[in-house]
Length: 154
Length: 258
Image (tube, rainbow over all chains, first blue to last red; front, side):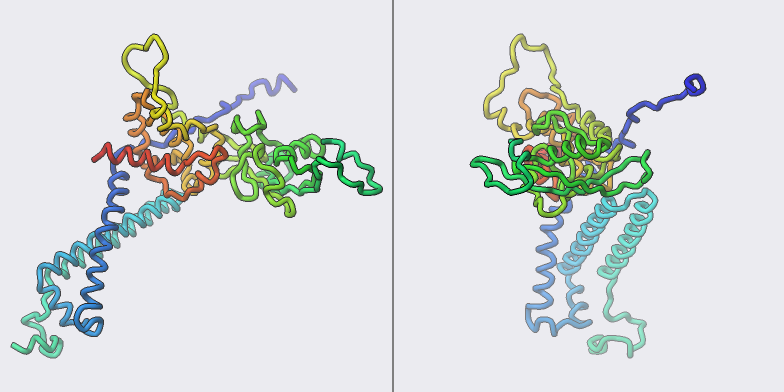
């Protein structure tokens, strides 16, 4: 029996657990700092936004198509909303990216989820930016019955 | 102490003054042995032993191994909380079996004993610590200096020594790393223990390898994976403020980058 099994090969007792690859770099550092910095800025932006929309003047009852159109006629609110959109989207996307990294166990799952996430990010940011800058409450060639009441005033 | 055990069973005598009371305790132990009839499945096994108020979980495990089931497998070396061999998950929390008194973990109910999580189990309570030590080796846990070696000791002020005193206490038991939820799902994460031992050298005034170590830990799988859940701080049998150490390493990286 001993001679029959004398050619047994024994694996090394400890397989080397090497890191799959080093992923050094400042990306995670900047993302970590960005989350904190953008969080503070977003606090100001969002509560300023809520205050302006809900508390000032007539409050929540003043919000309608005309109210939004009026706000976006001013460059201040264009920049404010643009900043809010971008910061919130990057902040949120980065947070979800972190959660996917934490919980997705397989590389395939992680790739698919992150792909969907980045697609959603691009769609929302592009559409949102487009709306903020190209918003025209009274397009000249639109049928009159579709226009807001204040467009026919002039 | 053993005098109490040999009381005649007929009548319960008055306990002598200073005698340690004994009681029965049940341990539910997570068993895994691929060579047994259970194969790759791990199963719960219950043992009841009579112990004293001064006994630790490790003493109960010894009693089981020596008197009831010799196949029960666990690691222990010094049995006094210094070697860090017997970290295990007792009643759902990572502790050292040799530092946990049975009376402190509610002996009225069965006490669950499992291997620490996140590392591959070899048998019963023994896990493969190699991934843990691989991360430890990566942060270069040794003194790095330049220039000529001094002819005498490298002196250090008491304040400089106190800067990293907390993280010198680590015994590499893996209780922190295996309590970390990020490590459970991502075995590539360096883990709290490696960062604690990097901290021990990064903040040592005699060491000159801080930049290299910060570079190593400035990894996607480095300190930035820490979610500050404080599981590690709670698990550490040496009372090291692990999360604080990780945060200090993060801060050192940020001040270096900006």
